[in-house]
Image (cartoon, rainbow, N blue to C red):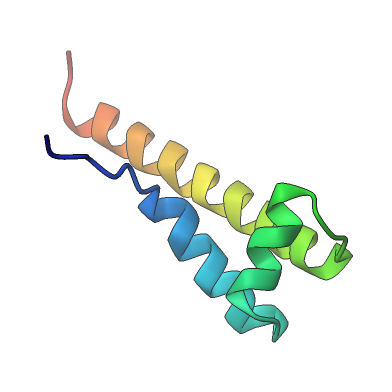
Length: 70
Protein backbone atom coordinates (compact mmCIF):
# COMPACT_ATOMS: atom_id res chain seq x y z
CA UNK A 1 0.00 0.00 0.00
CA UNK A 2 1.44 3.39 -1.01
CA UNK A 3 1.38 6.18 1.52
CA UNK A 4 0.79 9.69 0.31
CA UNK A 5 2.62 12.49 1.99
CA UNK A 6 0.67 15.71 2.19
CA UNK A 7 3.19 18.51 2.28
CA UNK A 8 2.12 22.11 2.60
CA UNK A 9 4.49 23.71 0.12
CA UNK A 10 3.28 27.23 0.86
CA UNK A 11 4.05 26.81 4.56
CA UNK A 12 7.42 25.26 3.73
CA UNK A 13 8.30 28.24 1.52
CA UNK A 14 7.25 30.66 4.28
CA UNK A 15 9.40 28.80 6.80
CA UNK A 16 12.45 28.94 4.53
CA UNK A 17 11.96 32.61 3.68
CA UNK A 18 11.33 33.57 7.32
CA UNK A 19 14.49 31.74 8.39
CA UNK A 20 16.47 33.65 5.77
CA UNK A 21 15.03 37.02 6.78
CA UNK A 22 15.35 36.56 10.54
CA UNK A 23 18.67 34.71 10.53
CA UNK A 24 17.43 31.73 12.55
CA UNK A 25 17.24 28.08 11.51
CA UNK A 26 14.27 26.55 9.72
CA UNK A 27 13.80 24.26 12.72
CA UNK A 28 13.55 27.27 15.02
CA UNK A 29 10.91 28.83 12.75
CA UNK A 30 8.90 25.59 12.75
CA UNK A 31 9.12 25.39 16.55
CA UNK A 32 7.83 28.96 16.85
CA UNK A 33 4.93 28.12 14.49
CA UNK A 34 4.08 25.08 16.60
CA UNK A 35 4.12 27.20 19.76
CA UNK A 36 7.01 25.34 21.36
CA UNK A 37 9.12 28.50 21.75
CA UNK A 38 8.77 32.27 21.43
CA UNK A 39 10.39 34.64 18.97
CA UNK A 40 8.49 37.85 18.26
CA UNK A 41 10.61 38.64 15.21
CA UNK A 42 9.76 35.31 13.57
CA UNK A 43 6.06 35.73 14.36
CA UNK A 44 5.93 39.25 12.94
CA UNK A 45 7.70 38.22 9.73
CA UNK A 46 5.37 35.24 9.25
CA UNK A 47 2.29 37.40 9.81
CA UNK A 48 3.50 40.11 7.42
CA UNK A 49 4.27 37.53 4.73
CA UNK A 50 0.83 35.92 5.10
CA UNK A 51 -0.86 39.33 4.87
CA UNK A 52 1.15 40.30 1.80
CA UNK A 53 0.30 37.00 0.09
CA UNK A 54 -3.40 37.48 0.88
CA UNK A 55 -3.29 41.02 -0.53
CA UNK A 56 -1.64 39.79 -3.73
CA UNK A 57 -4.20 36.99 -4.06
CA UNK A 58 -7.04 39.51 -3.73
CA UNK A 59 -5.47 41.82 -6.32
CA UNK A 60 -5.04 38.92 -8.72
CA UNK A 61 -8.64 37.80 -8.25
CA UNK A 62 -9.92 41.33 -8.86
CA UNK A 63 -7.84 41.66 -12.04
CA UNK A 64 -9.10 38.31 -13.33
CA UNK A 65 -12.70 39.33 -12.60
CA UNK A 66 -12.21 42.60 -14.49
CA UNK A 67 -10.79 40.76 -17.51
CA UNK A 68 -13.25 37.88 -17.56
CA UNK A 69 -16.80 39.13 -17.37
CA UNK A 70 -19.17 36.46 -16.10
